[in-house]
Amino acid sequence: MNEATARDLLLVRAVETADDARTAWTDADRAWASRAAAEITGSDVAPETYLARRAALAVERLRERYPSIRRTLRAVSWRPWVAPALALLAFALGLATDYLGPSKRINILAFPLLALLAWNVAVYAMIVVRGVWGLVSARGRMLGPLARAVARLGGGVPRTAAAREAPIAAALGAFAAEWARAAAPLTAARVARSLHLAAFAFALGAVAGLYVRGLVLEYSAGWESTFLNAETVLRVLAFVLGPGSALTGIPLADAARLEALRFGAGPGESAAPWIHLYAATVTLVVLVPRLALGLGTWLVERRLAGRLPVALEEPYFRRLTRSLGREPARVRIIPYSYQLAPRAVLGLQAIAARLFGTNVEVGVAPEVAWGGEDELPADLLPSGPLALAVVVFGLAATPEPENHGAFIRAVTARAAGAAVIGVVDESAFLRRFADAPARLAERREAWRELLTGHGLAPVFVDLDAPDLAAAEAEIEAAIAQARDGPSAPAGPPQARG
Image 1 (cartoon, rainbow, N blue to C red):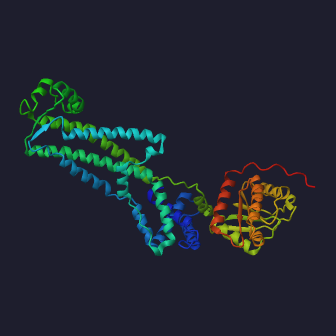
Image 2 (cartoon, rainbow, N blue to C red):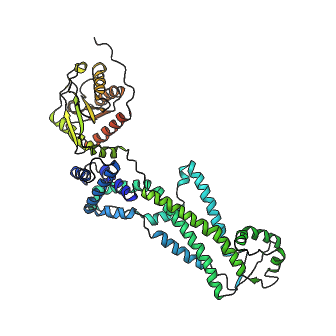
Image 3 (tube, rainbow, N blue to C red):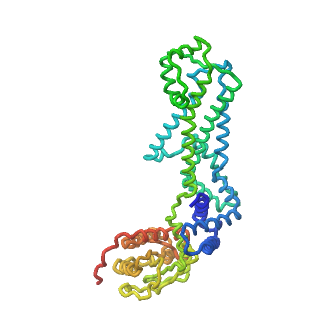
């Protein structure tokens, strides 16, 4: 998905996962976004398209409700003027380097463009080193100080939400951090493009400044050095200006000519050939490579902006797409040797609605009596596709592998590949032993051992007054474990007495 869609998607996820109380973005809001998106896209659309439409609808409503949403989205969006502004500034600075001294003499060993060449060659070496380092270490992929400064200039920092918008303050903070991580490769490409363009503009300004000033002033070129002789200077210039000489056809001075160009021996010679040589070398060593690097990073930026990776296999996104099908998600609740109170049924239905959205069908099977695991009724599970089977036990009961374990194996076999999870209702036990935390922990551990031994992740919940957010998270994790494949179940039960 493109950058804007990924940004909307991560923002809505932050709001929906951080707002446990569901005050900023209510259940009705979530249901509306899911229903409206499904109506617009249809039920046969790809999950990515549905999620994108739902996020766009949700962000539109959130922006109207909370001004901080608008400010945050604006703050984390890249400012397109950054690269042109840096380039213009760099060009102006490059023009300023054309000032060659009040004496109108150019020292060909201390030419301003020589430092420019050296700097760019050092940058190319650093790019190679950091590229190799980045293959083996995350630190090598981190931005340097200058790149971080450009990233802050281009991306901005979201301001804190107003006091009246406190319910979404945590969500916006989480979104800003998550977006920074998700968009890091895209930001790095934009920063690199901006810096390559600025370096190109600086070099272009420096070259242009030389020629502009040379139109109205006459400069002479020569050299002077305390330690170097003409032979050594020839070798240095051959290395530095060799590419420019090959491009322009202007020959380099030989040792005798260089000796005559010493400022102490005479006034030097016209600087025009030397300006042409340095300009040609800068073109080959700076302008062309920087333009190529800028184009390459621009192509990377375009690719990432059009296809920014978002992990849609995460539980949050899987939960949203469960309700995409035309058929409702069927959830079957199966109590074993435990009479579910009406409030407990309502609690399970509320959790199911949070997990599967509005397109869910929750059915409660008749209680399976103690010892009834050997002859389960034929209609225990629905005949159609099943999204989830929830076996429910009471924490007050002592877990018995011969009975509870056999019941779990029987239901799992009947489920025919559908996810099966185990919910242990703590409500009755809590009312009876509210002042005995050690006993509660001991009983939980016994049930955990039994359920995990049969491949189920245990979910402990007070169904009379469930913590919906916590229960949702635990059941989501249990479903994920069931989908990925349960651990090896325990062996067959011992022969019963």
